[in-house]
Amino acid sequence: MNEKTATGFSSLQETLVTHFKWFHSHPELGHHEWETTARIRDILADAGVEILDTGLKTGLVARIGNGGTVVALRCDIDALPIAEATGLDYASKNGCMHACGHDFHLTSMLGAAMLLKQRERQLTGAVKLIFQPAEEVANGAISVLASGALDDVAEIYGLHTTPGMPVSMIGVSPGAAYAAVGAFTIRIHGKGGHAAHPHECRDPIVALSQIIGAAQTIVSRRTNPFEPVALSFTHVEAGNTWNIIPEEAFAEGTIRAAGREQFNAIMRRLERICKGVQEICGVQIDFHCVLNAPAVHNDGELVEFVKQTAQELGLKTGPSAPTMGGEDFAFYQERIRGVFWNIGVASPEPAHNPRFIANPAALGTASALLSAIAEKSLKRLSSVE
Image (cartoon, rainbow, N blue to C red; front, top):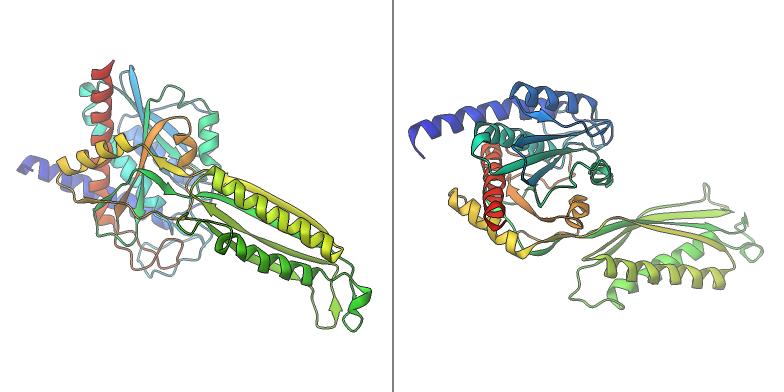
């Protein structure tokens, strides 16, 4: 890196840290990212970046380049309903928190936009930059796709912070990187009565306990131990006092699997358990399950491309640790070839924790890699045409 380049990188990093601290202290929940979107729009407009008219209520899509082949970069912009406990001088001011690094992601994308704008005349196509709303509620990607803004995109790339990796290290692996994720609810309608006369009741609590117990065998006894799956009950409600058997019981939870097929198999087994318990206990059981997002599946050829691009920038690379967490980036990959890669931020606590901290020292690195991936992807695709 020559002196001029080093000075420019230092200046960009300083600018990005300022933006990052503002976004961190002003988090907004999914589909309510009004201030966040306005701030992003202003920063892009100041940089002379074109903002497309997509009809999105929050979030936006911008474009840099001159037509022809199109590639996309994607970040997410929403926060989580978590009260921050980091003690940072730029901590959240409004009761929710960027506890998953989305403030880091969007700031990195702004940096990439600035770098790409500087090299716009050298681009052999166009780059679309997606500032996506509502990733945490798993439907923001669907709204972006529905807008039609990505209909001409040939490849798509996204990033995510990794708390446990060293600052600026890049992790990327082919195949399943994030799980297919879904949620289920179970509502049991029984017959309530006096706890002293259980024979006169149809106890929904007993029925629910049987479902929960039997459901544990889906993973432990009905699933290949080499397949990454998880089934967790996370919320249970029934009754309100010690001497009354209630009329109803309720539970909800999540299913995680490496793909749609595995997810659907687990869902069907849980549903069969509910039907069996319904028959045995004489209760009515309403079971509902929905797939929130399919699995993120990285294209092997493009993984090697990302890895090589990172190494050319002098960055350390390694495999990304697979996770049972979900990511609606998967919806883009169902239509467009792409890669979802990770960058280390060395947080003292994991994501979705009130003490999660994304180290802003990696912002410039993330921006540089995003812009390099976009530019090199366009050059590679243009040479094939």
